[in-house]
Length: 160
Picture 1 (cartoon, helix red, strand yellow):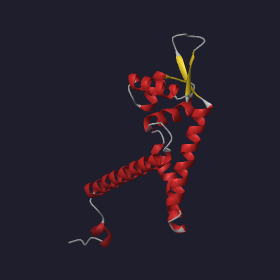
Picture 2 (tube, one colour; picture 1 turned 45 degrees about the vertical axis):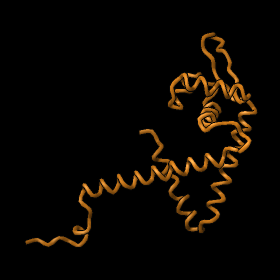
Picture 3 (tube, helix red, strand yellow; picture 1 turned 135 degrees about the vertical axis):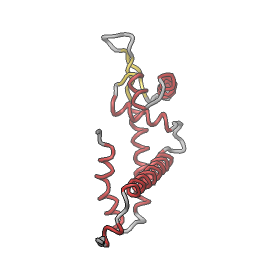
Picture 4 (spheres, one colour; picture 1 turned 90 degrees about the vertical axis):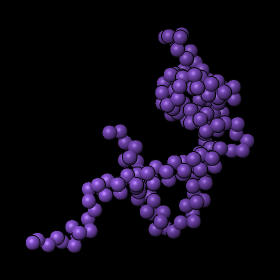
């Protein structure tokens, strides 16, 4: 009769390990989603007449623009008619402009305006201030642990 080592006796079975990873993934997904939602809510100013979907589209336009409505809809993972409404509202607010493509008059590209860029900057500043205020209540070691985890979280977002 062979005796198993203490480590082998306490090591989880592969199915248990998979369940543990799945549980960790679910907890991480929920926590990150809640943190994102809360930071977004704190970032939108009381006087800003902009929805989270318009703000997200505006940020994508700033990052990828000038961009076509189709490409913007694909990037934001919404249907083109929804994106048309979002961009129309952003345009009404003076946050974006549409430009007709010189080589193909059927194509319009959306570009952020200085007012749109200023709105994004204000929202980012407020979101960062919210997170900084929350982090200020953590110990130095706790903040260091969060900072140490950032490269791992960033790896999750890397393309396969």
